Image (tube, rainbow, N blue to C red; front, side, top):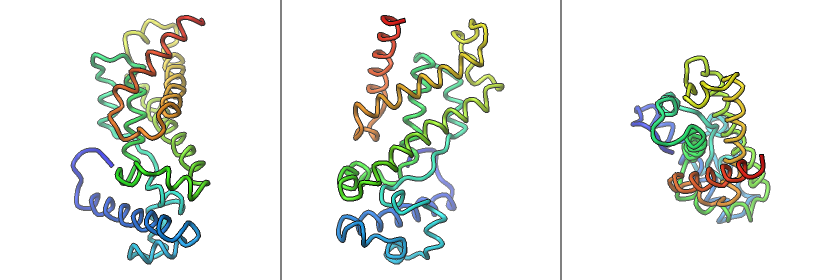
Amino acid sequence: MTGPELSRRQQNRVDALRAIHRAAYELTLQDGPASATVEAISRKAGVSARTFFNYYRSKEDAVLGIHPPQVRLEQLSALAQGGTRGLFNRVLTLMHEVVRDSIVDGSTFAHRKEIFDLLPESKDRMRAHMSACESAVQEAIVSNFDTGILQDEALKTQPDAQDSARALIVLAGSAFRFTYERAPFDLLSPPVEKVAESVEIFNRILKETL
């Protein structure tokens, strides 16, 4: 999990997320998926089953160490401020950042292939989570469109800037999935290089085929 400095309450939440995840992860690897029940995970983490569901939606989420994605205001501000990178690149980078922020423990997440092999349904859960991260970015951008968050010069020249922005977000979502499929186990590294590669590929294909 990344982001700004946390308050004590936020840090306590992060600590609980990690403790429950570690318990779920270790039980799954050491004793097998069948032994990693919500009750067993909660007991190992030192929390109640009710508390478990305050932090994770499912056993699979706890084993993987993922929680619902959020788009922070400072991330939207950074998107609006622009910089040397194009808007498409910035939206795609934001999607990667949101995924990274939703990961509880990078050290265990880096070895998630072991979990996929032991708990096949967790792979489907991971795909659904990636889709949720993409949707969270789309919703955040669209709901804040009137604030000028995507008032890029390239969009201002379009006859319908809002529809153009929506099309851009959909395209960025496709590039996001493409990037993940090319390097599914590279989510924790800085996204700059992988994003740049995907942007270049999409740019070339669109130019050559439209």
